[in-house]
Image 1 (cartoon, protein in one colour):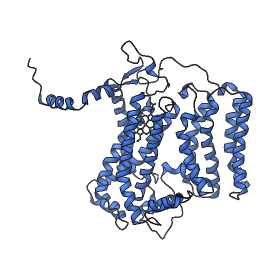
Image 2 (cartoon, helix red, strand yellow):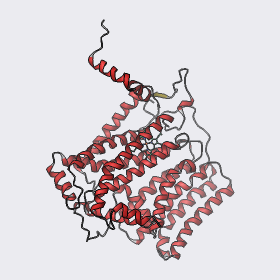
Image 3 (tube, rainbow, N blue to C red):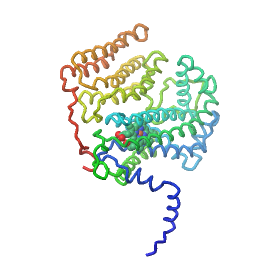
Image 4 (tube, rainbow, N blue to C red):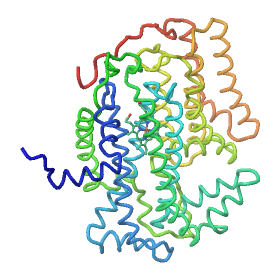
Amino acid sequence: MSDKKSLPVAIFDWFDARLPISSFWRTQLTRYPAPKNFNLWYFFGSLALLVLVLQLATGLFLAIHYQPNPDLAYWSVLRGIERDSHWGWLIRNMHIVGASAFFLLVYLHMYRGIMYGSYKKPRELLWLVGIFIYLVLAAEAFLGYLLPWGQMSYWGSAVVTNFVTAIPGIGKPIAEWLRGSFVVGTPTLNRFFVFHVFLMPLLLLALVLVHLIALHQVGSNNPDGIEIHENVNETGWPRDGIPFHPYYTVKDLFGVSVFFVIFFWFVFYNPGGWGLLLDKLNYTPANILHTPSDIHPLWFFLPFYAMLRGVPDKLYGIMTFAGSFALLACLPLLDRNPVRSIRYRPVLYKINIFMMPVSFIWLGIIAHGSATEQNMVFGLHVTEVFYATFLFLPFFNRERSLIAKLAWFLVAEMVVWGIDVWMYSIHAHSWHLMLQTDWIPATYVLLIFGLSVLFPSLARDSGKLPERVTAGGIFH
Ligand code: HEM
């Protein structure tokens, strides 16, 4: 048999001798051990990666036809792209639906990390990079929303840049620099366009790369939160590990197929997503002389909007909004219990973790309603619950004495009532209105600490952790 190589093999070998292609493939895929019990929550990271690529690809074609000028922007999108360019409508619909899909996937991805304690040692940096990714993603979405120059684009940007002015000292210069003027106008559109198509995507790509490098340095966590690298066979391979390729590449392909069915249903049949994925008001060109009666962001920012609206002071509103990111970033400090996965944590801890998305979605629903005073107070009280779900985490770090439990209970109730007294003292809201929804945080505090006093076992770690990962993954 001749040992002469075929042309494709020879070309590959030529490159492989000069670039680490096959060693990269081996170390990062075929010889990269992933825990064997990944469940469906582990689909969302790879799907987020897919949507990132889709957004970059569709964004490129949109940018080719888009005109970053207030006189032309609206019609360059609604007519130039949607009607006059080949497949323009498809590309735009994919970009619109892709933006919402990105946020949904990232929220699910983050919640998976919270449930399985993936922010704990040694993955703190991986988590922190994730938070930065979220912030850049949020900036990217905000900047892109101005580009079609519709009514909601314009007034949404005006409201947000106006909020920035509330930061003492630096707020006004930052807002002016962001707008390039005293109001949202031509310079604003030009710079938002450049930031949206150039700066933020570059940052996003760089951060995602760092995210994946950090992940491969420490290895994946799993639904049991057990470190697979601590139990290896004679060859050094984790006993509960399987090669990422082909096992998880195939599994992820299944996730991609299901995702595409849902994604393209929206793209073809419902790109506006009942006004949630693209506001109906944005089908009207921006009119700087007419402020819409109800200005609100797209669904993925609504919970934060409820926080901003709930606090009757711009600066404190911004602080509350920024504080929610600080709490997310501080999760590794707040939750220091060595048990990672929610599966092996006590019932009250489970309820607390469950209340995180519940209060977040609740805030979104409140902000979707109109800006009545009642909705604002409602938003404030649900914000308190959202904050509480993070601030209660240290309570579960270890077993607490009865005195400690009562102290936590009293302090938490006093904070809730203290905020109300302060609101009343500055005439922000009437007592009557505040009491209508004050029962929400007050009851939540009572539920967590009251039950932990009455039934201590509900707050106690069982101490039972399996030595190996358990059934429930795709191989069981
Ligand atoms: C563009 C957005 C993002 C992309 C493309 C991305 C991608 C990925 C991928 C592919 C994985 C490995 C597969 C998996 O575990 O699902 C992963 C893991 C992880 N990501 Fe992200 N990610 C993004 C945003 C975030 C954010 C916003 C956070 C949190 C704030 C985060 C936190 C994590 C953590 C903690 C892990 C390890 C999870 C574990 O091992 O259990 N990621 N990411």
